[in-house]
Every structure is written in structure tokens, then in C-alpha cells.
Length: 366
Image (cartoon, rainbow, N blue to C red; front, side):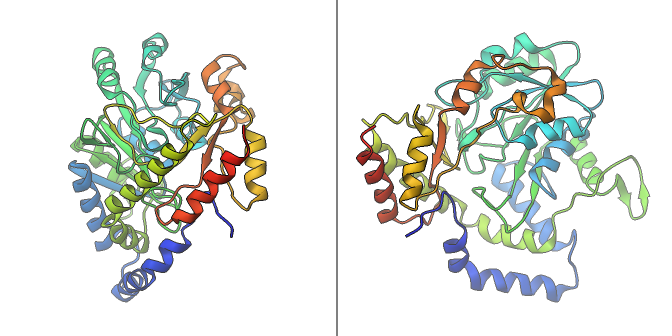
């Protein structure tokens, strides 16, 4: 029995008839791009977030880039974010012409260390991008106070936090604008790339609508330089279908996390924490151990496959060496990258599979 860190196959099997029905509706409609299914999903998702506007795009990366562009952030501007994140967070900043400025993360929850933000603010700073990592939101009370004081945009990177809450407010509704990913592994994932920008700011929304389609308000006429980034009708239809099930799927993720927490407590693994003000959606279940590579190897021998998010801090990557960071500049991020890894986590993971994972870890006698 092979246990993957993530799988869509069981979910697909359970939804296959409904998905095929939606696909047939799209193919029979004569509309494949920016049609009624896209508009419906945008309306449904913005309502889910309790926001006015949802602008669907090609990917979560594009969502961050277009969100920044909609706020006119670009060449010469600086954007504060973290290095313990997926590359797209940073590549999107660079792609719009701005410069990423890194702050370290907290040891306990891996989220942006809000006490370090103000030290990095300069005259060039225009935005903060907190990454709501692994299914949990950053400290937005503090972040928004800092942003207000320094007149900065707060763009939530919600690629990993769809369906999570901070003080009973949905992730994505906490800053000025937010970016989501619908990559297949996500809490709300499609069967290919997809993303969405969410906001209640009409000016940002109107620019984002225009920028995702070459800067056009009307066909074949560009008002400003934009890009090609559109969610197709098929994925919009599938995401609408899956959005109805997201709360139940998150409950199942939380139940799996509860089992892990109960039976791995007392082991030498450092387990994830759920902060007081948060409702954790458990996009991934991240643990820590100094013998990470040994544990992963032993689990693999038993057909159990884990993942590391993320083994290489972005500030140490060759692709971003021009930012002039050195090893040791972000000590917590660098230390975590050597010890963190994810145990299998997805809604249809079976109980016997969960207990097999737990049993093998316990038998390692770490």
C-alpha cells in the first residue's frame, strides 16, 4: 500500500460524474474563455471571502504579480516578504519590477516575524506580502498597524490558506488585496494551474480585470501594458463544484491533524501549532526533527512518501543571488529548512493509512 503525501485520485473518483457533467456543459456552451462559468466562480469565491471582487487568473503567481501591478508597484519599489515560502511569491515580485526584501520567520509557526518588519522599511518600501503558510494566517493585527503607520499596501499570499480564518475573518479578507492559487495540491485545487485576486477596492479590481487581458477594457484595444492571464471556463466550473465541498474537506483535514497530534504527542517530533486567533486549514501537516532525512528514508522504505516545504530558502538560491543575501542573514529560516517536512495530508486519507504512518514513526524510537 503506497501512501502519498498528497493525492487527488480518490477525490477525482468520488466527483468524476459531477466533473464530467460540468465539462460537457462548458463544451456544449460554445464559450471556453472568460465566460459565464468564470463570472460565476468569481462571484462565488468573493462571496466566500466576504469581499466585493474576485478576478480569476492563470495561476497564483500571476495573482500576486497582477495584484502588485494593480496597485502600481513596480520598478524601484521594495516589497517586504519572507524567504521561507514557495519561489512564486518572490518571482512575482521580481516579475513586476520590484525588489523583494526578506525578514525572518517565527520558530513556532513559521510565519513572518512581525517584530522585524519595521527594521526593513525604507523610503522605497511600498508593500508587505505576508505568506499565510501551511494553512495558517500571519499576525494581521500587527501587520495592518504597521502598514497604516507607514502607508503600505498589504497583499496576502493565500496560496496555502484558502478556508482558514484569523479572528473569524476569512484568509484573503485581512489585507488590502489578496492572491490565491488553485494549483492541484491546494485546499481548493483544480486539475491544472489557476489563481484569483480578491479585494473590495474598486480601483485595484478594475485594473486587475484589465491587466489580466493585455490591459484591455474593450476588445483589441490596450489601455496599458498588461499580460495574458485568464482562468478557463472548464477550471472555473470544476472549482465552483469543489468550492461547495471545501468546508467539509477542511473539517476532514483538521480531523487528520487531530489524530496526528494526539498520537505523535510525546514523540521527539516537533508538531505544528495552531495559533490562538487562527482556524488552521492544514494545507500541509508540517513537523520538525533533526533526523529528518533519516525519518523520510525509513518512511519511504514502507511506501510512505513525505515532502519538504521548503528545503532551500529563497535568499540562498542562485536565481536570486543578485539580491545580495548571505547564509546566516535569516537564521531561523535557514535552520528550519534543515528540519521541516510534511506528513501525508489530504481529506480522503484513510484512518488505517494515518495509523500506519504513526506506528512506523513511533517504532523508529527517535
